Amino acid sequence: MLGLLRNTQEPTRTVDALQPGASGDRGLPPAGTETEIERLRGVIAQLMHTAAHDPLTGLLTRGLLLERLQNELAREAADDARIAVLFVDLDNFKLVNDSLGHGSGDEVLSEMARRIVGCIGPQDIASRFGGDEVVVLHPHAIDGSGEALGQRILAALADPIFISGKEVVVTASVGIALCKPGVKSAEQLLREADTALYAAKDRGRARLVEFNDELHTRVEKRLQIESDLRAALRKSQFFVEYQPQVRLKDGCVVGVEALVRWRHPVHGVVAPGEFIPVAEDCGLIVPIGRQVLLESCRQLSEWMQAMPGRPLAITVNVSPRQITEPAFFTELRQILAETGIDPASLCLEITESVMMSATEEVVRVLNQVKALGAYIAIDDFGTEHSSLSRLRDMPAEVLKIDRSFIDGLSSEPGDTAIVSSILSLAYAMGKHTIAEGVETREQAAMLLRMGCEVAQGYFFSRPVAAERIGPMLSRALWEPRSARALHSAHATEGLARRGHRYFIDEFLDHIGAPMGTKAGP
Image (cartoon, rainbow, N blue to C red; front, side, top):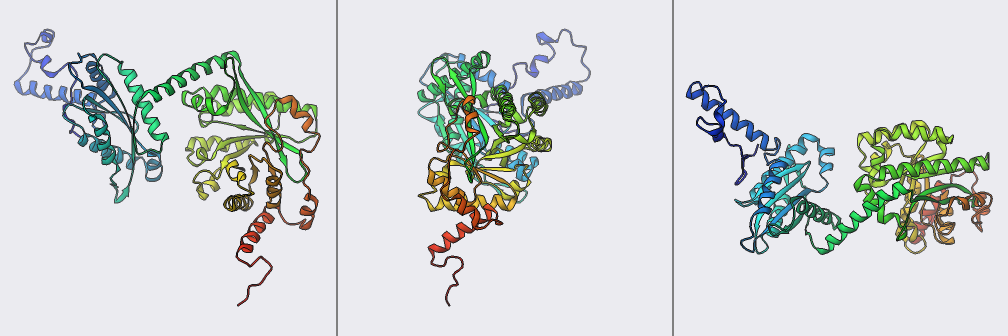
């Protein structure tokens, strides 16, 4: 334990209350020797200290900070001082545990606590709220002293930490909320500081953000969305649209992506970007995702019954919170059994960021899904810092090229290089690719020439209701003008290999030495 806390308040039941002669000692047995009494006092004091402090960091427990905060908020406002609460959270602390081990992570947390204690004043207290999150109570904030304290904490935590001879740099984010006594409850003030903390992380981390009216409006909106989401689940306001996935060489639909929509009774159809993050935060993404998965598989079963022998696949986005639910795999098997679809017709999408930071539990479940016969796709591929070794070890068989790279295919040489590199990587690793966000014929033609097999986007079709997919299954959604010539030129050469060669040709052409031309001396 640190033993360095300033002005640490112990619980109200003190050791003195148990001394002989105190009002509470009537039922105590006669004391033994004076030495025995002193020993008992020491044991009781140690037990009380242990109960009041976090065993790893020595910081106060959550309960004691809440008690102190409630007392401060209940005092009379005798001056202009305000009560400040600071939420401090390490940035990317999970990477420390994953790369150096939990033992090293504990050392980082202990050092974090020591440095925070070194920043606070004699009237301040610090408490470990859980994980790598520390709350500091600054009960007399005057003339910006709360913000100044937050900046001192940021500076102190930014210095390198030496763990087992290695230098580790771990930054922190701080959210701060202030109020005068008697204005807000402890829960409200803590919630506002927590909101400010998440705003700090959203704005780039390693910074301090103070709760304000703008954040207050955002919180109110979020709470309203959460309330409306709960009602939407009860009233079946969610529905699914489907976007065709097209085989580029002939324009045939080979799959669809299921996309959830929310028909709000007041605001109409709400975009997923407005409610999915809230659903993730509050856990409602689990029942929503379950509904989408079941509805999508039922719909695929209907299409396949209407067109027997017509191959068709469906991709469904799943949240990491869904995957870590104990019942997820069991429910997936039940859905496949109920709908009767072949597991090989189902592809579950997870984002690249989730895949790269997947826990052992997530990887275990994904391997179960793969063993069942279903596919795993990495969505938004290329937008995060992927590790090739991590990608190699993941059970993902499909890479979905992010639309941000497709946008620049006809205008940004860098995007062309990235797309071609992803196609080459997928070819080398034996993975499938799907290009997202195709909006022009030129983009589709370039992807075809580069070796991409399947694409989706507004050029082919927007996401549509299920009944509009049926007619699309019997016709081509585009006719590549030179597809026949492109695909007969090298019949035995893989599409992705030709895409890789195309990229090299383009690059060497820029430096004056296209492939097949021997450079001079």
